[in-house]
Length: 117
Image 1 (cartoon, rainbow, N blue to C red):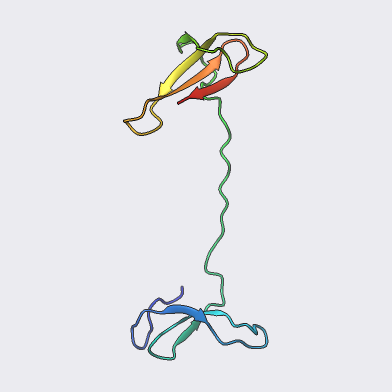
Image 2: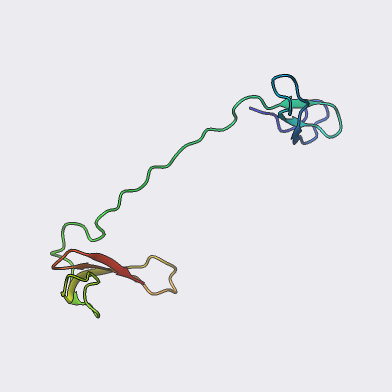
């Protein structure tokens, strides 16, 4: 672990470019004290890169629609090939309390899913 305070004068260390050599002609980064000549050259790896997995899209209404209410949707199903006007639906409060709830729909005939804010 790299130090954050100078071990000699206890001042806070700052980052600057350390002097170069044959292997690193442009120098390397180092923690350096502003009041004394102390430097801690950063030559190791001080972080780990991690990647987050993408969440798989789930069926927003699940497989069990029998307990969900069916409603007539104004404008009908957004799928161009479907002429159905009925869909399963439920509402959730996805934003702050002073905003209206989000309505989730799933067409009874084609299974197209959508939401309206």
